[in-house]
Length: 279
Ligand code: AMP
Image (cartoon, rainbow, N blue to C red):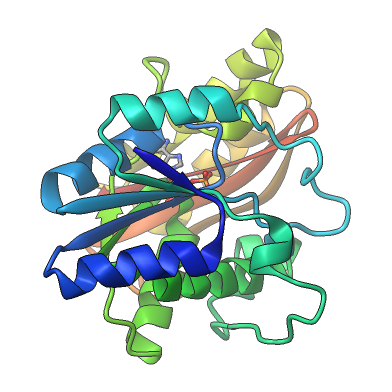
């Protein structure tokens, strides 16, 4: 496994693999790797000739009062995980390499970037779409792996790829959860053990909602779930929405499938989760 810290060097290496006819898989991450990330890596290692894992805490996707500085950076452990899972290249660029002070170009996916999490994090998805575009250009990825945990992010990247004719195929990967149901997240490390117990109610609520969805109108499902989330101690709900699986628009009354997506603060930690519901 090679660790590459420079974007041009990574691009040269990736281009050589492309010329050699290798299929390249990219797993974009912000590090603090857990079993959720590993599930993406495993898929790439299985599907692709070459697997590149990027570890880059992208300042452009954090708002001014968000957790950029305190975001966990257990780099030694991350590299061990990558090595153990047969990653070929870990791409770990510096902020200055990716976003030098004269950087001027940004990618926006209108409408999709402004709803749900975008209401509360207005510049977040512009930062995500921009860094992912750069990573696609640097890696020449044939496939890139994204978790359904970040459902809105996945939809935004899928739309960006379609609108801008990127060659990279997006591979959505299911959410990996703890036994308790809590969706794995690098931010779970911020939770005290008591807060973690409170946070378990989020996934429990989503699961119960998906059962109710089978025979109850979606607005009742949404209302019941909202009432359950409101009971979580020391919490604040940013949003709870039932949306169309393809374009995140409000679901229609007769939809046979929809996603229930939530963002909830537990103490000082903002957690997102979602579930795909079918009739
Ligand atoms: P992050 O490091 O949080 O930016 O996440 C990098 C990638 O891992 C994104 O595509 C996430 O959706 C994905 N991911 C994060 N947590 C999980 C999880 N619990 N299950 C599956 N994928 C995940």
